[in-house]
Image (cartoon, rainbow, N blue to C red):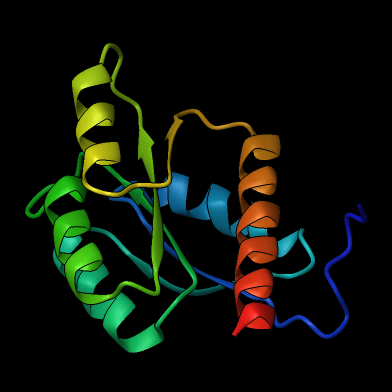
Length: 140
């Protein structure tokens, strides 16, 4: 299996949602260093996340669980109900937040990633999501 994306494959489109500008910058810098993945929008809370996802139609959203206003779990419910083509991975910095992670999975999150995150975990997520998307496109 090659690390390079298929030449015919379009980049995996990603929306980043976190109330921390530091985390958003770290995610954007990581993605900028990767082939085959592009950021198509960012948001700082659940309400703006839904708007950005509605406008950008990303393949993947990476969203913090705890944010001011509408949190990630509330936004996840709306995203999964209305934007089924967008898959969601959640970020969590809560120590002992097993119940929040369990709820995220129950609501349809594909992965819960602990902060601070390791680049290799996100890289593997992007690769598997790109492969899944391309495989589904081939199958029709």
